[in-house]
Length: 97
Image (cartoon, rainbow, N blue to C red; front, side, top):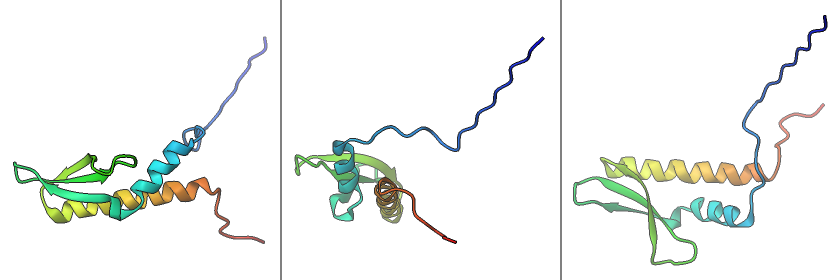
């Protein structure tokens, strides 16, 4: 009797090819000047980003109780998209021998 045994592991999700439209969106989101904070009628603060094509259109992203919280959310989003753009450049060499 023969037994076939196979294992596999992933270090992360397989990455799909990123198109030019997605890259342009990430560039837009990685620039803090394309973000704003608005106050809602219920007193919460909403972070929004500007549309790439229509500069008069804003897309809501998060709602926070304080303006500081909304700004931290924007800062975190900007950092996230900067890292995504850096990832597209390929791996970073951290040490060579």
